[in-house]
Figure 1: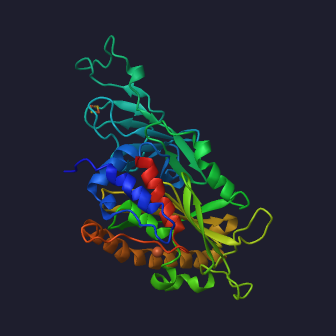
Figure 2 (figure 1 turned 60 degrees about the vertical axis):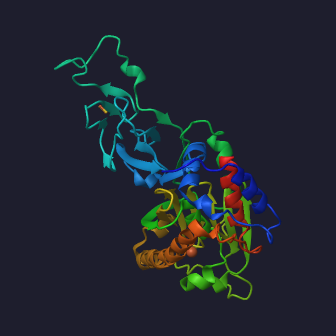
Figure 3 (figure 1 turned 90 degrees about the vertical axis):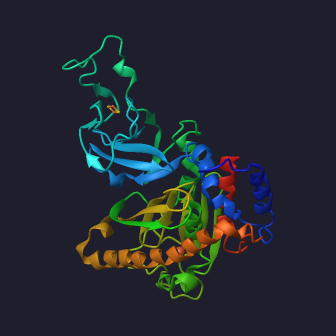
Length: 387
Ligand code: FES
Ligand SMILES: [Fe+2]
């Protein structure tokens, strides 16, 4: 049972978070618990443009995928024309969750009383609505009872939804991200493979763990972090937050690319290898990593207050995605991430475990002024969204 979160704590947390970063304090532990999560369910997730999937999750017309966005059941559908639509995954009859699992179907039939919807959400059939063998009833307006649509935005292969339909236009929301990568040639990204995982921590703890380079040399030796020690915070409040890192640090051999690059490098529009790699949250739920030779796009979605579903997908540049000669390099990249990502799990679980008691112990979290401005920016965006 959740109770109303004490809103006065939000102003106090914002003040402590906004101090000069060497003195700033991170969000209190209570902000990673059930009461604050209930506030986020009302104020943060429905009002934002939330990344919820990649388009490759539903590649073919008629593909559909139900997604739980912090308790909001939504459905994304690939249209006949190749577009993507989203709906509340709730039947207009008696309100059950309509589609239970990923499927491909030309029509969506509710299992309870067989109300049937088209891929465009229109209510097509209401069998026996007026009695045995009678599907039409005078005055019953089927045209107004289609699935409730949700606005959709797309960038690269990420699919975003705005559940309450009241957010500023998607083009405005995504513009800072587009500007950040304006000189990147990402026009021929091709799908590689998925990485799916689950973290035993609040979605914010999971996200914070992925947008700082501070822990890399200590927690992920496989990432060769000694090659890229020049990290710059990358923060655009309201849009994205994370880090940009020089791909090859001073002193490294000219052909020595960081991030264990195995494939032909991604390029700028001018044809040069990318000078920086980026690891960012596209706030609140999107995650993007642009490495020297591959891209990761995905989502971190809450599964209740203390668990996070991680759904990340690898992409490669053009032929690098399919060239048989590079098969081992692709497999090696996937294997590296299968080694590295689980290494974060014990830290996320341990941070979550202490979140419930550290306020009572008088312990506030702190930031590295060099490495963690992106984490602070993420926390500021959370507070801005719920205030
Ligand atoms: S609840 Fe869906 S048809 Fe009755
Ligand atoms: Fe990590």
